Amino acid sequence: MKRAFCLLLAIVILAVPFVSVNAESEMSDYCVYDVSDVLETEAWGDMEERAMGLSLEYKCGVYVILLPGFEEYTHYDDDMNMAASDILSRNDLGYGADRDALLLLIDTSKQTSAYGATGPRGTALFNATALSEIDPSIASGTASGDLDAAISSFLDECARLFIYERDNGKAYGYTAEENDPEPVRDPDAMITDCVYDYAGILTADQKDQLEKKARYLSELYEFGVYIYVVNDYNDVYSSDDVWYACEHVYETQGFGYGSANRDGIMLFMSMDDRDFATYRTVGKGYYAFTDYGLYELEEYFLPDFRRNDWYGGFQDYLTYCDYLLDLAEKGTPLDYDPSGENDPTYPSGEDTPSKMTFQEKCIVLAPGSAIISLIICLIYRGKMKTAGIKTQANDYIAKNGIRMYDTRDIFTHSTTSRTRVHSESSSSGGHSSGGGHSFSSHSGSHGGGHSGKF
Image (cartoon, rainbow, N blue to C red; front, top):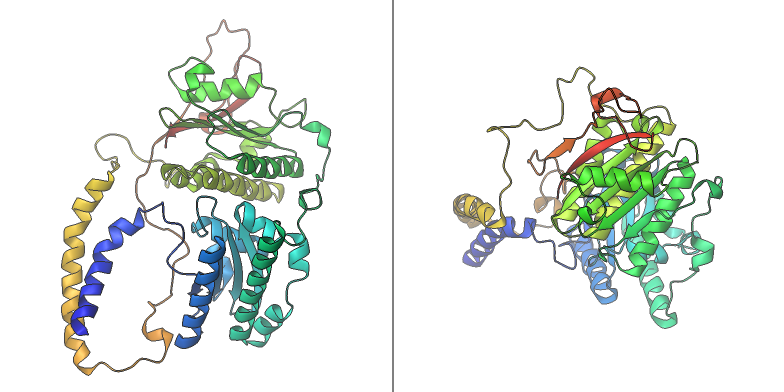
Protein backbone atom coordinates (compact mmCIF):
# COMPACT_ATOMS: atom_id res chain seq x y z
CA MET A 1 0.00 0.00 0.00
CA LYS A 2 2.80 2.39 0.92
CA ARG A 3 4.67 1.59 -2.29
CA ALA A 4 1.55 2.22 -4.33
CA PHE A 5 0.95 5.54 -2.60
CA CYS A 6 4.53 6.69 -3.18
CA LEU A 7 4.39 5.65 -6.82
CA LEU A 8 1.09 7.50 -7.31
CA LEU A 9 2.45 10.62 -5.66
CA ALA A 10 5.53 10.56 -7.89
CA ILE A 11 3.37 10.22 -10.99
CA VAL A 12 1.13 13.11 -9.93
CA ILE A 13 4.06 15.44 -9.29
CA LEU A 14 5.80 14.50 -12.52
CA ALA A 15 2.55 15.05 -14.41
CA VAL A 16 2.13 18.62 -13.19
CA PRO A 17 4.01 20.25 -16.11
CA PHE A 18 1.89 18.31 -18.58
CA VAL A 19 -1.47 18.90 -16.89
CA SER A 20 -0.83 22.62 -16.55
CA VAL A 21 -0.59 23.05 -20.32
CA ASN A 22 -3.27 20.56 -21.31
CA ALA A 23 -6.00 22.72 -22.81
CA GLU A 24 -7.84 19.94 -24.63
CA SER A 25 -9.41 18.16 -21.65
CA GLU A 26 -13.21 18.10 -21.55
CA MET A 27 -13.52 18.85 -17.83
CA SER A 28 -11.49 20.14 -14.90
CA ASP A 29 -10.26 17.62 -12.33
CA TYR A 30 -12.79 18.52 -9.63
CA CYS A 31 -16.28 19.94 -9.36
CA VAL A 32 -16.53 20.77 -5.63
CA TYR A 33 -13.95 23.22 -4.26
CA ASP A 34 -14.10 23.70 -0.51
CA VAL A 35 -11.74 26.64 -0.05
CA SER A 36 -13.38 27.43 3.30
CA ASP A 37 -12.60 23.90 4.53
CA VAL A 38 -16.01 23.31 6.11
CA LEU A 39 -17.20 20.03 4.53
CA GLU A 40 -16.66 16.61 6.06
CA THR A 41 -14.63 14.12 4.04
CA GLU A 42 -17.46 11.72 3.34
CA ALA A 43 -19.92 14.47 2.45
CA TRP A 44 -17.40 16.12 0.12
CA GLY A 45 -16.74 12.79 -1.60
CA ASP A 46 -20.44 12.16 -2.22
CA MET A 47 -20.97 15.68 -3.58
CA GLU A 48 -17.93 15.45 -5.83
CA GLU A 49 -19.08 12.12 -7.23
CA ARG A 50 -22.59 13.44 -7.95
CA ALA A 51 -21.40 16.70 -9.51
CA MET A 52 -18.82 15.01 -11.73
CA GLY A 53 -21.35 12.37 -12.77
CA LEU A 54 -23.86 15.02 -13.86
CA SER A 55 -21.13 16.99 -15.65
CA LEU A 56 -19.94 14.03 -17.70
CA GLU A 57 -23.39 12.59 -18.41
CA TYR A 58 -24.93 15.84 -19.62
CA LYS A 59 -21.74 17.47 -20.95
CA CYS A 60 -22.07 20.62 -18.87
CA GLY A 61 -19.88 21.35 -15.86
CA VAL A 62 -21.65 21.41 -12.49
CA TYR A 63 -19.62 23.21 -9.83
CA VAL A 64 -19.86 24.13 -6.18
CA ILE A 65 -17.30 26.57 -4.78
CA LEU A 66 -17.18 27.54 -1.11
CA LEU A 67 -15.16 30.66 -0.33
CA PRO A 68 -14.49 32.48 2.95
CA GLY A 69 -15.07 35.81 1.15
CA PHE A 70 -15.92 35.99 -2.55
CA GLU A 71 -14.63 39.57 -2.94
CA GLU A 72 -11.03 38.37 -2.82
CA TYR A 73 -11.45 36.23 -5.93
CA THR A 74 -13.11 38.57 -8.43
CA HIS A 75 -13.38 42.13 -9.67
CA TYR A 76 -17.13 42.04 -9.06
CA ASP A 77 -16.83 42.56 -5.32
CA ASP A 78 -20.27 44.23 -5.04
CA ASP A 79 -22.28 41.73 -7.09
CA MET A 80 -22.08 38.09 -6.05
CA ASN A 81 -24.04 36.80 -9.06
CA MET A 82 -21.67 38.53 -11.49
CA ALA A 83 -18.77 37.26 -9.37
CA ALA A 84 -19.99 33.67 -9.76
CA SER A 85 -19.85 33.76 -13.57
CA ASP A 86 -16.56 35.68 -13.47
CA ILE A 87 -14.93 33.06 -11.24
CA LEU A 88 -16.02 30.34 -13.65
CA SER A 89 -14.59 32.23 -16.62
CA ARG A 90 -11.27 33.34 -15.17
CA ASN A 91 -10.47 29.83 -13.88
CA ASP A 92 -11.28 28.05 -17.16
CA LEU A 93 -13.97 25.91 -15.55
CA GLY A 94 -16.59 24.26 -17.72
CA TYR A 95 -17.15 21.42 -20.15
CA GLY A 96 -15.64 21.31 -23.63
CA ALA A 97 -14.49 24.13 -25.86
CA ASP A 98 -17.55 26.29 -25.06
CA ARG A 99 -16.92 25.89 -21.30
CA ASP A 100 -20.58 25.27 -20.51
CA ALA A 101 -21.02 25.35 -16.75
CA LEU A 102 -23.44 25.88 -13.87
CA LEU A 103 -22.18 27.08 -10.49
CA LEU A 104 -23.38 27.42 -6.93
CA LEU A 105 -21.09 29.94 -5.20
CA ILE A 106 -21.27 29.99 -1.40
CA ASP A 107 -19.70 32.67 0.78
CA THR A 108 -19.31 30.87 4.09
CA SER A 109 -18.33 34.01 6.00
CA LYS A 110 -21.58 35.80 5.09
CA GLN A 111 -23.70 32.64 4.69
CA THR A 112 -24.92 33.79 1.30
CA SER A 113 -25.08 32.07 -2.08
CA ALA A 114 -25.32 32.97 -5.76
CA TYR A 115 -25.55 31.24 -9.12
CA GLY A 116 -23.36 31.58 -12.18
CA ALA A 117 -23.22 30.15 -15.68
CA THR A 118 -20.94 30.24 -18.71
CA GLY A 119 -21.15 28.98 -22.28
CA PRO A 120 -24.20 28.88 -24.58
CA ARG A 121 -25.84 25.91 -22.83
CA GLY A 122 -24.96 27.05 -19.33
CA THR A 123 -26.49 30.49 -19.77
CA ALA A 124 -29.55 28.98 -21.49
CA LEU A 125 -30.11 26.50 -18.64
CA PHE A 126 -29.74 29.20 -15.98
CA ASN A 127 -32.07 31.64 -17.70
CA ALA A 128 -34.16 34.15 -15.76
CA THR A 129 -37.22 31.88 -15.60
CA ALA A 130 -35.28 28.86 -14.35
CA LEU A 131 -33.44 30.87 -11.70
CA SER A 132 -36.66 32.49 -10.47
CA GLU A 133 -38.09 29.03 -9.77
CA ILE A 134 -34.98 27.42 -8.32
CA ASP A 135 -35.40 25.56 -5.04
CA PRO A 136 -35.47 28.16 -2.20
CA SER A 137 -34.04 25.57 0.19
CA ILE A 138 -30.61 26.22 -1.36
CA ALA A 139 -30.52 29.80 -0.10
CA SER A 140 -32.18 28.93 3.21
CA GLY A 141 -29.76 26.05 3.79
CA THR A 142 -26.81 28.35 3.14
CA ALA A 143 -28.19 30.99 5.50
CA SER A 144 -28.80 28.45 8.27
CA GLY A 145 -25.42 26.77 7.85
CA ASP A 146 -26.85 23.48 6.55
CA LEU A 147 -24.46 23.37 3.59
CA ASP A 148 -24.85 19.65 2.91
CA ALA A 149 -28.59 20.11 2.32
CA ALA A 150 -28.08 23.26 0.26
CA ILE A 151 -25.55 21.63 -2.04
CA SER A 152 -27.65 18.48 -2.40
CA SER A 153 -30.65 20.61 -3.41
CA PHE A 154 -28.52 22.44 -5.97
CA LEU A 155 -27.39 19.17 -7.55
CA ASP A 156 -31.02 18.01 -7.64
CA GLU A 157 -32.00 21.23 -9.43
CA CYS A 158 -29.22 20.80 -12.00
CA ALA A 159 -30.35 17.22 -12.66
CA ARG A 160 -33.95 18.41 -13.10
CA LEU A 161 -32.91 21.06 -15.63
CA PHE A 162 -30.74 18.59 -17.55
CA ILE A 163 -33.54 16.02 -17.74
CA TYR A 164 -36.05 18.62 -18.93
CA GLU A 165 -33.63 19.77 -21.64
CA ARG A 166 -33.01 16.18 -22.74
CA ASP A 167 -36.71 15.30 -22.90
CA ASN A 168 -37.92 18.53 -24.52
CA GLY A 169 -35.01 19.53 -26.74
CA LYS A 170 -34.64 22.94 -25.10
CA ALA A 171 -33.81 24.45 -21.72
CA TYR A 172 -36.63 24.94 -19.25
CA GLY A 173 -38.13 28.41 -19.44
CA TYR A 174 -35.82 29.53 -22.23
CA THR A 175 -36.98 31.32 -25.37
CA ALA A 176 -34.55 33.44 -27.36
CA GLU A 177 -36.96 36.36 -27.57
CA GLU A 178 -37.71 36.46 -23.86
CA ASN A 179 -34.16 36.02 -22.61
CA ASP A 180 -32.16 38.27 -24.91
CA PRO A 181 -30.89 41.33 -23.01
CA GLU A 182 -33.18 44.29 -23.56
CA PRO A 183 -31.52 47.40 -24.96
CA VAL A 184 -31.50 50.04 -22.25
CA ARG A 185 -30.61 53.01 -24.45
CA ASP A 186 -31.19 54.32 -27.94
CA PRO A 187 -30.83 51.32 -30.31
CA ASP A 188 -30.50 53.58 -33.37
CA ALA A 189 -27.13 54.87 -32.14
CA MET A 190 -25.50 51.56 -33.16
CA ILE A 191 -25.83 51.09 -36.91
CA THR A 192 -23.39 48.20 -37.40
CA ASP A 193 -22.95 44.68 -36.10
CA CYS A 194 -20.38 44.13 -33.35
CA VAL A 195 -18.81 40.75 -34.19
CA TYR A 196 -17.20 39.89 -37.54
CA ASP A 197 -15.65 36.46 -38.14
CA TYR A 198 -14.20 36.32 -41.64
CA ALA A 199 -11.79 33.54 -40.64
CA GLY A 200 -14.56 31.13 -39.66
CA ILE A 201 -13.18 30.30 -36.20
CA LEU A 202 -16.56 30.52 -34.45
CA THR A 203 -19.68 28.41 -34.74
CA ALA A 204 -22.90 30.17 -35.70
CA ASP A 205 -24.20 29.85 -32.13
CA GLN A 206 -20.99 31.19 -30.63
CA LYS A 207 -21.00 34.19 -32.94
CA ASP A 208 -24.64 34.85 -32.10
CA GLN A 209 -23.97 34.73 -28.35
CA LEU A 210 -20.99 37.08 -28.66
CA GLU A 211 -22.97 39.48 -30.87
CA LYS A 212 -25.75 39.69 -28.30
CA LYS A 213 -23.35 40.36 -25.45
CA ALA A 214 -21.30 42.93 -27.40
CA ARG A 215 -24.43 44.71 -28.58
CA TYR A 216 -25.84 44.76 -25.06
CA LEU A 217 -22.64 46.29 -23.63
CA SER A 218 -22.48 48.83 -26.47
CA GLU A 219 -25.98 50.06 -25.80
CA LEU A 220 -25.67 49.85 -22.02
CA TYR A 221 -22.61 52.10 -21.92
CA GLU A 222 -23.23 54.01 -25.16
CA PHE A 223 -19.82 52.84 -26.31
CA GLY A 224 -19.20 50.49 -29.24
CA VAL A 225 -17.52 47.16 -28.39
CA TYR A 226 -16.26 45.24 -31.43
CA ILE A 227 -14.55 42.01 -32.50
CA TYR A 228 -13.09 41.69 -36.01
CA VAL A 229 -11.31 38.53 -37.23
CA VAL A 230 -9.62 37.98 -40.61
CA ASN A 231 -7.22 35.42 -42.05
CA ASP A 232 -4.56 37.92 -43.19
CA TYR A 233 -4.63 41.59 -42.20
CA ASN A 234 -2.81 42.55 -45.43
CA ASP A 235 -5.97 41.59 -47.31
CA VAL A 236 -7.69 44.38 -45.39
CA TYR A 237 -4.97 46.99 -45.39
CA SER A 238 -1.42 46.54 -46.70
CA SER A 239 0.95 47.47 -43.90
CA ASP A 240 3.92 46.15 -41.95
CA ASP A 241 1.92 46.23 -38.72
CA VAL A 242 -1.47 44.73 -37.90
CA TRP A 243 -2.37 47.79 -35.84
CA TYR A 244 -2.74 50.02 -38.89
CA ALA A 245 -5.10 47.47 -40.44
CA CYS A 246 -7.10 47.56 -37.22
CA GLU A 247 -7.31 51.36 -37.35
CA HIS A 248 -8.28 51.26 -41.02
CA VAL A 249 -11.15 48.86 -40.38
CA TYR A 250 -12.53 50.90 -37.49
CA GLU A 251 -12.39 54.17 -39.41
CA THR A 252 -13.76 52.91 -42.73
CA GLN A 253 -16.52 50.57 -41.48
CA GLY A 254 -18.42 53.27 -39.60
CA PHE A 255 -17.80 51.71 -36.20
CA GLY A 256 -18.44 53.53 -32.95
CA TYR A 257 -21.38 54.65 -30.87
CA GLY A 258 -23.12 57.78 -32.09
CA SER A 259 -22.51 59.69 -35.30
CA ALA A 260 -20.44 62.44 -33.63
CA ASN A 261 -17.81 60.90 -31.38
CA ARG A 262 -17.97 57.29 -32.64
CA ASP A 263 -16.79 56.10 -29.23
CA GLY A 264 -15.63 52.50 -29.11
CA ILE A 265 -13.03 49.79 -28.75
CA MET A 266 -12.14 46.99 -31.15
CA LEU A 267 -10.21 43.74 -30.87
CA PHE A 268 -8.71 42.86 -34.27
CA MET A 269 -7.19 39.42 -35.00
CA SER A 270 -5.26 38.14 -38.01
CA MET A 271 -5.13 34.34 -37.84
CA ASP A 272 -2.45 33.41 -40.41
CA ASP A 273 0.46 34.79 -38.37
CA ARG A 274 -1.42 35.01 -35.03
CA ASP A 275 -1.37 38.81 -34.86
CA PHE A 276 -3.71 40.93 -32.77
CA ALA A 277 -4.37 44.61 -32.21
CA THR A 278 -6.55 46.70 -29.94
CA TYR A 279 -7.92 50.12 -30.85
CA ARG A 280 -9.86 52.56 -28.71
CA THR A 281 -10.99 56.08 -29.45
CA VAL A 282 -9.90 59.16 -27.54
CA GLY A 283 -12.24 60.84 -25.12
CA LYS A 284 -14.40 58.20 -23.47
CA GLY A 285 -12.21 55.45 -24.93
CA TYR A 286 -9.07 56.75 -23.28
CA TYR A 287 -10.93 57.48 -20.06
CA ALA A 288 -12.32 53.95 -19.72
CA PHE A 289 -9.40 52.09 -21.32
CA THR A 290 -6.31 53.72 -19.86
CA ASP A 291 -2.89 52.48 -20.91
CA TYR A 292 -2.78 50.23 -17.87
CA GLY A 293 -6.40 49.20 -18.30
CA LEU A 294 -5.77 48.23 -21.93
CA TYR A 295 -2.73 46.22 -20.87
CA GLU A 296 -4.77 44.40 -18.21
CA LEU A 297 -7.53 43.73 -20.75
CA GLU A 298 -5.04 42.05 -23.08
CA GLU A 299 -3.58 39.99 -20.25
CA TYR A 300 -7.11 38.77 -19.50
CA PHE A 301 -7.97 37.33 -22.92
CA LEU A 302 -4.62 36.44 -24.54
CA PRO A 303 -4.03 33.22 -22.52
CA ASP A 304 -7.23 31.79 -24.05
CA PHE A 305 -6.03 32.51 -27.59
CA ARG A 306 -2.69 30.82 -26.95
CA ARG A 307 -4.70 27.66 -26.22
CA ASN A 308 -6.74 28.24 -29.40
CA ASP A 309 -9.81 28.85 -27.24
CA TRP A 310 -11.31 31.53 -29.45
CA TYR A 311 -14.79 31.64 -27.96
CA GLY A 312 -13.46 31.70 -24.41
CA GLY A 313 -11.02 34.49 -25.30
CA PHE A 314 -13.74 36.65 -26.83
CA GLN A 315 -16.00 36.01 -23.84
CA ASP A 316 -13.18 37.16 -21.53
CA TYR A 317 -12.57 40.22 -23.73
CA LEU A 318 -16.22 41.25 -23.42
CA THR A 319 -16.31 40.50 -19.70
CA TYR A 320 -13.32 42.70 -18.98
CA CYS A 321 -14.64 45.47 -21.26
CA ASP A 322 -17.79 45.39 -19.12
CA TYR A 323 -15.65 45.69 -15.98
CA LEU A 324 -13.60 48.64 -17.29
CA LEU A 325 -16.61 50.50 -18.68
CA ASP A 326 -18.46 50.00 -15.40
CA LEU A 327 -15.53 51.47 -13.47
CA ALA A 328 -15.40 54.44 -15.82
CA GLU A 329 -19.13 55.06 -15.48
CA LYS A 330 -18.69 55.12 -11.69
CA GLY A 331 -15.92 57.72 -12.08
CA THR A 332 -13.11 55.36 -11.03
CA PRO A 333 -11.39 54.12 -14.23
CA LEU A 334 -8.71 51.49 -13.77
CA ASP A 335 -5.42 53.34 -13.81
CA TYR A 336 -1.81 52.69 -12.90
CA ASP A 337 0.84 54.43 -10.79
CA PRO A 338 1.17 57.86 -12.48
CA SER A 339 4.83 58.04 -11.43
CA GLY A 340 5.61 55.23 -13.87
CA GLU A 341 7.80 53.45 -11.32
CA ASN A 342 5.74 50.27 -11.67
CA ASP A 343 5.19 50.37 -15.41
CA PRO A 344 3.76 46.93 -16.29
CA THR A 345 5.43 46.75 -19.72
CA TYR A 346 8.39 44.41 -20.00
CA PRO A 347 11.92 45.64 -20.66
CA SER A 348 13.52 45.16 -24.04
CA GLY A 349 16.90 43.66 -24.84
CA GLU A 350 18.73 40.77 -23.24
CA ASP A 351 16.84 41.00 -19.96
CA THR A 352 13.48 40.36 -21.63
CA PRO A 353 12.11 36.95 -20.59
CA SER A 354 11.77 34.62 -23.55
CA LYS A 355 8.85 32.31 -24.26
CA MET A 356 9.52 28.61 -23.82
CA THR A 357 8.11 25.85 -25.97
CA PHE A 358 6.20 22.95 -24.44
CA GLN A 359 9.17 20.62 -24.92
CA GLU A 360 11.55 23.10 -23.28
CA LYS A 361 9.22 23.40 -20.30
CA CYS A 362 9.16 19.64 -19.88
CA ILE A 363 12.97 19.40 -20.08
CA VAL A 364 13.40 22.14 -17.49
CA LEU A 365 10.64 21.04 -15.11
CA ALA A 366 10.88 17.23 -15.27
CA PRO A 367 14.22 16.81 -13.39
CA GLY A 368 13.13 19.16 -10.62
CA SER A 369 9.77 17.40 -10.35
CA ALA A 370 11.50 14.04 -10.10
CA ILE A 371 13.78 15.26 -7.29
CA ILE A 372 10.89 16.85 -5.38
CA SER A 373 8.76 13.72 -5.75
CA LEU A 374 11.60 11.53 -4.47
CA ILE A 375 12.09 13.73 -1.39
CA ILE A 376 8.37 13.80 -0.62
CA CYS A 377 8.07 10.05 -1.10
CA LEU A 378 10.91 9.41 1.33
CA ILE A 379 9.32 11.73 3.89
CA TYR A 380 5.93 10.05 3.55
CA ARG A 381 7.52 6.64 3.70
CA GLY A 382 9.01 7.48 7.08
CA LYS A 383 5.81 9.03 8.39
CA MET A 384 3.51 6.24 7.23
CA LYS A 385 4.80 3.87 9.90
CA THR A 386 2.48 5.68 12.28
CA ALA A 387 -0.20 6.53 9.77
CA GLY A 388 -3.82 6.23 10.85
CA ILE A 389 -7.23 6.62 9.30
CA LYS A 390 -8.15 10.23 8.63
CA THR A 391 -11.75 11.33 9.11
CA GLN A 392 -11.55 15.00 8.19
CA ALA A 393 -11.12 16.57 4.74
CA ASN A 394 -8.77 19.10 6.37
CA ASP A 395 -6.04 16.46 6.51
CA TYR A 396 -5.98 16.08 2.75
CA ILE A 397 -6.55 19.62 1.53
CA ALA A 398 -3.73 22.11 1.24
CA LYS A 399 -4.03 25.22 3.39
CA ASN A 400 -6.26 27.86 1.74
CA GLY A 401 -7.56 25.27 -0.77
CA ILE A 402 -7.58 26.18 -4.43
CA ARG A 403 -6.24 29.46 -5.59
CA MET A 404 -8.67 31.36 -7.72
CA TYR A 405 -6.12 33.69 -9.31
CA ASP A 406 -3.04 32.98 -11.35
CA THR A 407 -0.42 35.25 -9.75
CA ARG A 408 2.70 34.01 -11.54
CA ASP A 409 4.79 36.68 -13.21
CA ILE A 410 5.69 34.89 -16.44
CA PHE A 411 6.53 36.71 -19.64
CA THR A 412 3.94 35.74 -22.22
CA HIS A 413 3.96 38.29 -24.99
CA SER A 414 5.07 41.69 -26.09
CA THR A 415 2.86 44.57 -27.13
CA THR A 416 3.75 47.57 -29.20
CA SER A 417 2.05 50.96 -28.91
CA ARG A 418 1.78 52.89 -32.15
CA THR A 419 1.69 56.65 -32.75
CA ARG A 420 1.06 58.03 -36.21
CA VAL A 421 3.37 60.95 -36.92
CA HIS A 422 2.27 63.57 -39.45
CA SER A 423 4.48 65.93 -41.33
CA GLU A 424 3.97 69.65 -40.98
CA SER A 425 2.37 69.70 -44.42
CA SER A 426 -0.31 67.20 -43.42
CA SER A 427 -3.76 68.66 -43.95
CA SER A 428 -5.38 66.58 -41.21
CA GLY A 429 -3.41 68.17 -38.40
CA GLY A 430 -2.03 66.50 -35.32
CA HIS A 431 -3.39 65.48 -31.99
CA SER A 432 -1.80 64.05 -28.87
CA SER A 433 -3.26 62.67 -25.70
CA GLY A 434 -2.23 60.89 -22.52
CA GLY A 435 0.39 58.19 -22.88
CA GLY A 436 1.55 59.27 -26.32
CA HIS A 437 -0.55 56.66 -28.10
CA SER A 438 -2.94 58.98 -29.95
CA PHE A 439 -2.66 59.88 -33.63
CA SER A 440 -4.58 61.62 -36.34
CA SER A 441 -6.16 59.17 -38.74
CA HIS A 442 -6.82 59.80 -42.39
CA SER A 443 -10.51 60.36 -41.64
CA GLY A 444 -9.92 63.00 -39.01
CA SER A 445 -10.92 60.98 -35.92
CA HIS A 446 -8.45 59.93 -33.25
CA GLY A 447 -7.57 56.74 -31.45
CA GLY A 448 -4.77 54.49 -30.26
CA GLY A 449 -3.95 51.06 -28.96
CA HIS A 450 -1.55 48.12 -29.03
CA SER A 451 -0.48 45.30 -31.32
CA GLY A 452 1.34 42.03 -30.76
CA LYS A 453 1.32 38.26 -31.20
CA PHE A 454 -0.71 35.56 -29.55
